[in-house]
Length: 205
Image 1 (cartoon, rainbow, N blue to C red):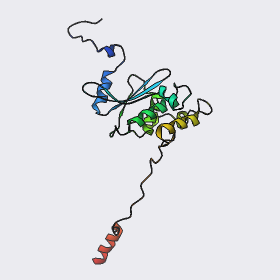
Image 2 (tube, rainbow, N blue to C red):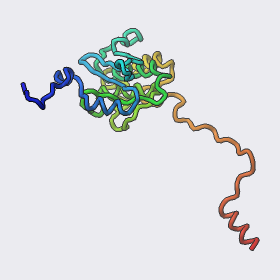
Image 3 (cartoon, one colour):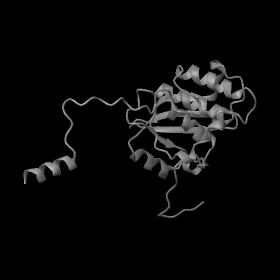
Image 4 (cartoon, one colour):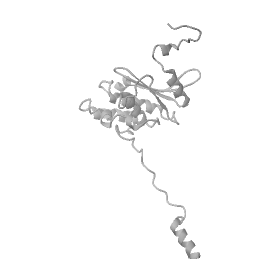
């Protein structure tokens, strides 16, 4: 082990390869709660965590283990499972994140289309704002589970409907999102166009 007057022992979690403190510092500088996604072979854990001086505080949490109580009877270590866990966590976080959250990958590699970004898509569909690039999100058909087997897309939509109260269509936008408000009628006469103003000036001159 290295030694000497200028050597400092790294933090325990850094020595164990569990925390990248440099990345954590940059995330905390955003002053936004962190959307933490962690994976195992069979499960996905999604948490919304807020930093406090006394320690991290979990605002909302969900895992794929909870999906069994919502009608999901298929394996949980896949993209649809990660998506539904993200949707559940995002639904529970509604109202607590007025400014949104920032994605915390930890030591996970940012592979486009992976389970991490499937969970992110679920959180986004729940209405939580998270900065992201659309190119990293999995294709809609993989979120619906068409690659997993027959009957899976219908089951994914059924569980998503249970979680969101029917507000989310898997692989699409939340119902009501993206609709532009109807244009309001002007209170008075419309302002004259630039051409009309110029023609009036020529007439007066």
